[in-house]
Amino acid sequence: MTYKNWNIHRFPRNAAVTLTRAGYRPLPAVVLASRGVSTAGEAERLLDRSLDLLEDPFLLKDMDRAVARIAKAAADGEKVMVFGDYDVDGMTSTCVMLEYLESLGLDVGFYIPGRSEDGYGLNMSAIRQFHEAGVRLIVTVDCGVTAAEEVRYASSLGMDVIVTDHHECKPELPEAVAVIDPKRPDCPYPNKHLAGVGVAFKTVCALAGPDGREDVVRRFLELVALGTVADVVPLPGENSVLVSHGLELLSRTSRPGLGVLLRDTCLDVKRVTTASVGFSLAPRLNAAGRMGRAELSVRLLHTADPEEAEAIAAELDALNRERRELVSAIYEEASAMAVGQDGPLVLARRGWFQGVMGIVAARISEQEQVPSVMICVDDDGMGRGSCRSFGSFSLYSALQSCSDLLEDFGGHEMAAGITIAESNIPAFARRFREYYFHEIQGIPEPALEIDYEVVKPGLLTLDDLEALTALEPFGNGNPPPVLCLRGAVLTHLSSVGNGAHSRFRISKNGESFDGIFFCQAPEDLPVKQGDRIDLAFEPQINVFRGRRSVQLMAVDVKPHSPEELL
Image 1 (cartoon, rainbow, N blue to C red):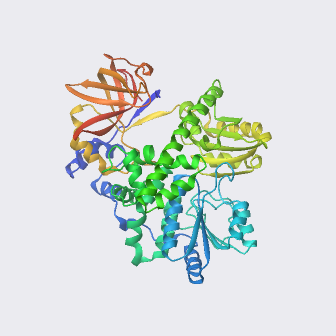
Image 2: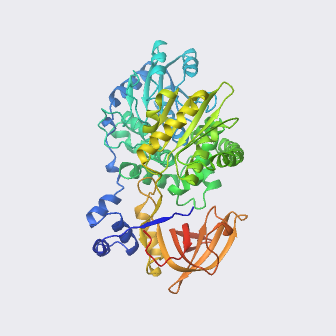
Image 3: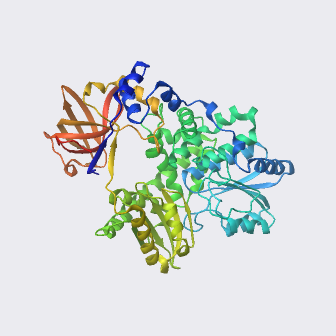
């Protein structure tokens, strides 16, 4: 996309000089300064990834009650069921909880609801199945905090429920044995942004106790990193510690399933990054959930058998191809429906495949630069929708304002899901739009946030780019640095990837750099070879046949404008 406005950050030059004198290389120094870091002490605290920063799990409300109830289940030989969710956060949460409860000797199974047939979260049908199978304790992961009615039903059948979740709470909490959610209003846990797998991990840490912490970290942090990055929760603070150490473990994983995924999807298996997870690993795992086979991904993560891992990975690959075809077809239909509309989009149709609604909603929101709700309606007139936000708009608050029109809803500020009767969709669309325009006061023009304008291209060295890795992990709340070069000459432009992407070379002040523009063909760009351009990019180190070089991953490009871009 082309941003109308570029917001090039102005940083205190004195702060950058101070950081450079403290030993930071020039490029990390200017990026840190542009993000408000002015002293070496502030930088050290910001970049600290020590495991000692992990919070005490017993700060989570009800953790003591959960530990006591699971200990009772182990002592009494009770049958336990882990109830998860069909996204990567839910899959990794399920695997963490399942494996640790198995290690305690519990008779434990797992259940992942189907997107189409079950919908999100605990449901009555599954609870009846558990009761008939002799289950005495249900442990939810990445779901359950809004399931007050379902928990009451389980209790009426003589089953206890422990909820571990990270989603927003409704006024009525479930009457469970324990409700562990950092977003509970009465929960003192400092990190309110744990992913579902982070909450599951904290529960396991509490069960293991201080003496078992090292083993738990070694066994599960790679899964925690995978689920945390995939769920796009804010990464500063404790989450950055979990992800940083987890990615390091992931790069040398002993899990056969993760090993196969890394081999098949990642360009550099020796250094797994948040981008590797977000663009390669997570979509492959998510494909199973979107196509109604989430248990496949849990089995892949859980198996210790290399042959089974290979077989499951082949199934996932086939499901991923099918998922891509569905996304492409529905995206084209949704794009056509969006033409001529202003403000947030509520798009509904019978026959759409519910499992890919979230992907399409995200693409539509990015394309149209507004929040979007994609609803697939079944033959009984019930719609299930996936919602994605844009900018700073809070989806959860908007859905709360429309709750009387919804059968159910859940999620957080940036992503949510709804269940709605088809007859209520027009009224919901009107109310949703009214709330949006009241909150936003007009449609905002998005601006590209740029950390630093590179006036001297010689600053873009391999050593400086390597030093930028100290700022990782990148993600929500800690985006990868975006830089810009203005007035460079586009000396080469060609298509790659069957015409889907553009490869280019630019030159300025005697320095030349190669780059890539993903999902933009040369003919779709607003510039051509030979033009003087302004380029916004993420600097990367490209490794090809053992040779390392600086590469610019383009974020935006436009003809050079001599006036200030603000």
